Structures are given as structure tokens and as C-alpha cells.
Length: 295
Ligand code: ADP
Ligand code: MG
Image (tube, rainbow, N blue to C red; front, side):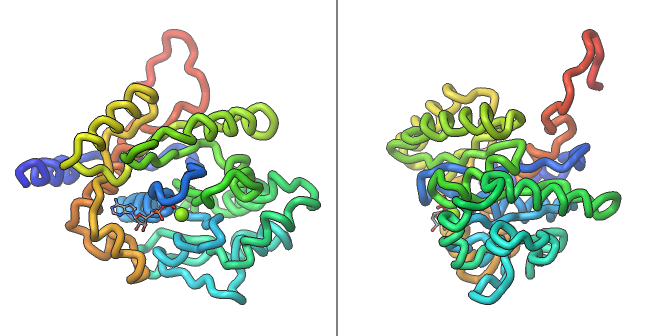
């Protein structure tokens, strides 16, 4: 408890900064249930609460991110399917979250499940999301500029995930602090390398977040150590604890950031948001000339 009080104090005095240009993340891990959607919606909400303008693109036909953000996604609603398959502008499907201002969502409807196959014969099938997103972002400049975009991926490496990788600049990989946590991560990295080679040379695995950490088990601590050893540069300092409030929030059509803002889950996602927006947190877009200081 004393530790939590200290962490809350640290957040109160933390300085945050809007990134110099929109940061576009794909949240990916082909393993299901590792916390992709939970991380997408809670981190997005935490950033919006810090004053950032944030867009979530729901690329999972389950539509869990849309549910958690309180954005309708029943059959008949226009969603990301219509953007990918029919070329509808993203602006026509984006809706503001019902519970957090400054947070927007392009919903996924169940017909997105068919898109995996319907995309196959289409022209530029891998870059349809990228094109739609770039058009959307260039239509939102000045005061309306978005600071962060998060694309929530389905648990597979099909064309929907490929579209997400091609649209993004950064990859955020959530890793569950459980047995076999790293299983599949090397396959994921191989796939990302292939995307980089053939479709999107800018793609960078910038951020790794450990989720569902259980402080009572040695296993969680061991997994966390192992992940830090493998990815010293990319691992976010904050670890997301396993917390019942986090798992309850979506059934209320909310993120934990509004459902229980004082919970330890909300505190942790707020800390991650602060890490991502602390001054100089943005990856440097261009190499600095020799001897130049970034201060
Ligand atoms: P994915 O999108 O990778 O399939 P989810 O984000 O849907 O994974 O999470 C899987 C399940 O674990 C969900 O039921 C979610 O509520 C739960 N969950 C995720 N993160 C936490 C957490 N920190 N504490 C407790 N439950 C969590
Ligand atoms: Mg999910």
C-alpha cells in the first residue's frame, strides 16, 4: 500500500508531452488471451485521460475493443470491414468512446471474420488499412491531430494482422506472465521481419508490455526476468498486475480507467501511458547529426 501511495504521488508530478507526430502502434501476439485487447483499450483510455487524442482500430471480428469502449458494433453498423472491403473512408465509421473524451474507435463487426478471405483477391490487399488510415490522419491536422493510434489484432497472422503491420510504425507486444510466455514470440518476430523486408521497412518492435503479473508466484517473476533479458530496450518498466477489476470492466462497456480509476490495474495502465509520453519517449524519427544534442 505504501508502494502504491508512492506510485500515485509520482504520477501526480510526472510530466507528459504530446508526440511530435502521430505514433501508430499495432498491438500483436498471435497467442490469444495474452492481453492485447485489454492493453489496447486501457492504454488508449489512459492516454486520452492525459489529454492525448487517441484512435483505436478494432481489427478483431470479436469486437471486444469496440465493446470495452462503448462503441456499437452489431450487424448493420458500418465498421472496419466496410473500410477494408468497400473502401469506405475511416472517418465514416469512427465513433467517440461513450466514457472517455478524446478517445475514438473504428469498430469491428462480425462480418470482419469473412474479410480474411474476401481480401485475398482484392488489389493491394495488404495495404488497405494503411491507405485508409493515412487518408484519415491527413484529414485531421492542427487541433484535430491524433497523437496515438492503436490497432488491436486478432489472434492470428492472417491478412487482417498483415494489414495492421503494414499500417503501423511501431509494434506493441503484450506478453502474459505465464508458462510458455515466449513461445510463439520468435515466430511473431520472424513474421514481423518478413513484413519489414517486403511490405513495411519502417516497422519497429518498440514496446513490450508484461501483463497479468501475479506478484505471489515465482513463475511471474521468472517470466518477467526472462523477457527483460531478451528485450532490454523494449520492455516497459511498468508491469500490469492480474486484477479482477480489469477483467470486469468490459462487461460494463467501459475500460478500467473509468470503471474503477483507483484500482491497481488503472494505476498501472496510467503509469504505462506516462512512460510513453514522458519527454523524449518518442522514438527519434530521424538520425541526429554527429555531435548534436537532443536537449
Ligand atoms: P487478447 O486480446 O490477447 O485475446 P484479452 O485482452 O481479451 O486478450 O484478455 C484475455 C482475458 O484475460 C480477458 O478475459 C481479460 O479480461 C483478462 N485479462 C486481461 N488482462 C488482465 C489483467 N491484468 N487482470 C485480470 N484479467 C485480465
Ligand atoms: Mg483480443
